[in-house]
Image (cartoon, rainbow, N blue to C red):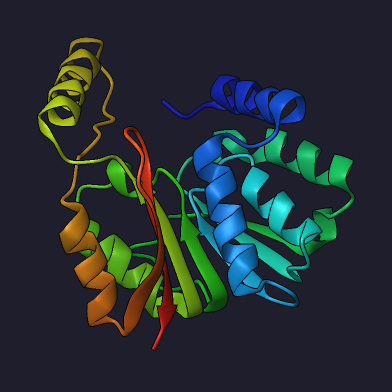
Length: 201
């Protein structure tokens, strides 16, 4: 599903248009909280576009944990072009179950929770690794989004793909972060992609 072809398309889109509105909101929210000198850990960062923006805004280092190896070549090329390759570490693995990843000042997940069946495990692990700030985006949970998601999964099954998407309850995801000592400080409310920024109490 997330292969080198998708990665090349994403990288070229970033070169031409920059970040999309939801990703830009995440960057703006993190910059508002302060990223100077911070270590950023992104789960499922794809080609690393958000990381590049945060490094340009003053973050010290970035770590990307990716489930699919298909993004690596395109991500490396973008990092080289931006002159920050030595400040980015990229890892392959299942973040929610692989305990080898260290903590970071900032942990973010953009359009990732909807790709994972166990949101409590994923959000909980992200919160556990975040020393200061946690940000994640997700689709709204309403009749339209649930219908679209169901149709998408039917198509995936019909075409022989293993990937499935999920529309998790936003309130419960935020409550999971609260259970780990975080409180919301900013939220993005839009029709397609919602997002929340939380800080550790």
